[in-house]
Length: 291
Ligand code: HEM
Image 1 (cartoon, rainbow, N blue to C red):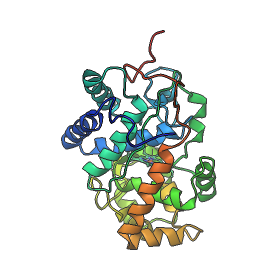
Image 2: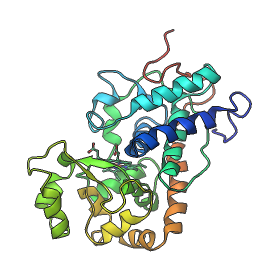
Image 3: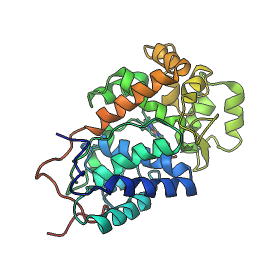
Image 4: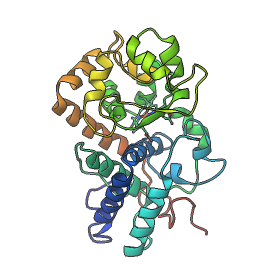
């Protein structure tokens, strides 16, 4: 059972320390906010929000697709953890730091705030074989719905959480097939992306939200309605299917998007946490404690 007041007596400065660290990192590079939000998603979908994605293990989650060569800014979480350890040694888990950092990242980029429930503990292992629980950019709508439903997240949650693609960047290899071979894409948009992305794929980057890549807003949904989704999986949400009406609702109502997104983030943040005496409070987020 997580609680918003979990550190109120044991570490009253935990939340402000995390926020300062996130604000400084996002000020230096706006994309960091996107990277931390995604990291929390990839933590929660793989064996629950247990900090397992943070373990810097050469055969762990970080080394498995879709994380390898893609998840970034672990250094920011490591440095925030060091600052939190300096004020309250051995108290605040890495899984909680990541959940709060994801929220603070959204806020730093102009998005909504929500209350993060706390009290997660950290795993003592990484679960690379479970990264298959994560969706792929090639996923169909049915696959997306089923991967989220496996985590008790419904279609509205899935569409709302996908709105995270209002910020951040993707590598050409994750959308080359969409811009060269799919037909449900705006022709001028596809042509302009092809200039920096060969048909065979590459590590070149393009913004997930072509309009406002460093502002957390609802433009992502407007893009989908004009066939300007960057990933095949993005455009699946508005492709004459069952989620079209939710996309148009979120495109036309920033408040409908905000309330659905924040509610879904809380739900995602509750996925199978370790609590009580399970797991541990890691002393450094990249490695399990030595026994
Ligand atoms: C619905 C299924 C989803 C799929 C198929 C998907 C897939 C992807 C892919 C392929 C990338 C680009 C990675 C790269 O090229 O290195 C990406 C980036 C990103 N994703 Fe998702 N994602 C999904 C849902 C989510 C959710 C639920 C969140 C958070 C709540 C999220 C947040 C992000 C962010 C913020 C980025 C940009 C990261 C950066 O710039 O470092 N995604 N996603």
